[in-house]
Length: 172
Image (cartoon, rainbow, N blue to C red; front, side, top):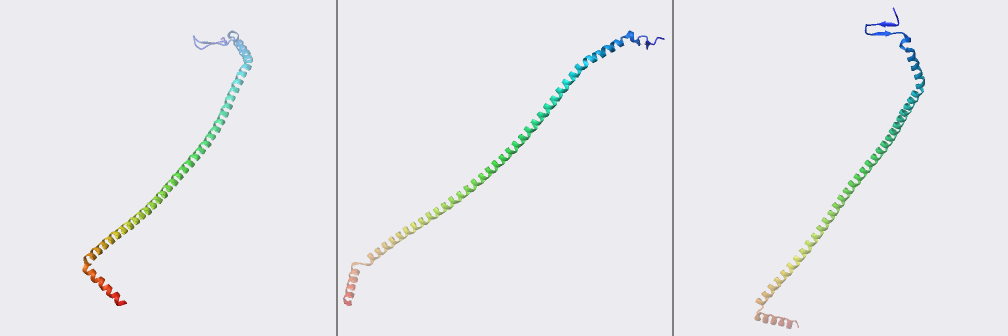
């Protein structure tokens, strides 16, 4: 039996003869190829490793910058919220002050109108009283004159004058 030829089937066989199969030549070529190409592969792996490390460092730096920008944005947002709340508070205060001032001015105007109206009413009352008094006085005077004219006839006037003259004589 030939150990260099092992047949599993009639169609397939394994040749174990090292010299016939050139296994040694293939191993020598692979060894030389490995020795020659190892520094090249090592260089390629080093380059790739360096590139990956650089990418990781850049990513870390970018992450730090992003975190810094995020912190700055949060700070600016907080400041903006503070400014907005201050503006809202100032606006509310201004509105409240304006409302109070308007109400105070309205109260003053109402009081001024009340005083003006009261003064006007009082002056109208005085005018009406005075006018009524004048009209009443004129009417009374007219009535007295009319009554006197009706009562003091020429005979009554003569008798009155005579009586007055007699009284004056008696006094002397």
